Amino acid sequence: MSRTPTSTPPSAGGPGPGGTKGYLASPEQRLRYLQTLNEVARATTGQCLSRHLGPYLLIKALFFLALMRPTDPARTDKHLKWNHRRHLLQEVLEQYERTGAVDTAHFPTLDDYAARHSAPGHP
Image 1 (spheres, rainbow, N blue to C red):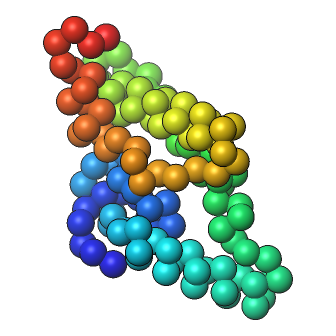
Image 2 (cartoon, one colour):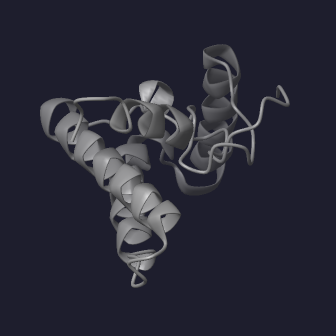
């Protein structure tokens, strides 16, 4: 596993909302990680865990959005992070509806989201 900082665990496979926490897994590392999880799950339960990854990420996105709704209007950093999480939830919903799966590898980091949304002419 590379030590590139993000906040997403290797199972999610892409940059996470925290920006500088956790690890970023390469596509090859993510595949090996999910294959290993599936082997262990198949041996113990008879089912693959990866078939539940989409629903898990959908619930996780909703949970984190509800968990961190900002209450202090002066905390613009919290509002930015919450709007980023709303954006991620929308991406998760769209992917899951379209494909039945969720791939977080191309989701924007908080820093990328902030840069795009603070650009002139962007709401």
